[in-house]
Image (cartoon, rainbow, N blue to C red; front, side, top):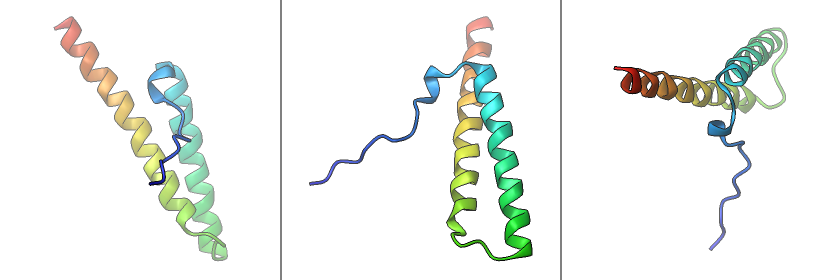
Length: 74
């Protein structure tokens, strides 16, 4: 049985500032992909789906840290 390679970086190893920078950069990439797709079709439209999922993963990690911080302080 084939094993799945873990090619994604471990988000827990990033600092909060690094995660925020990644969210911003990925959102900019998604915006550029949307504009490119509107002008002329992308050769690989699944890129937009991948970018949206990456943004969701990053924001999920940020929210988990925010909740953990609230629980620890509260």
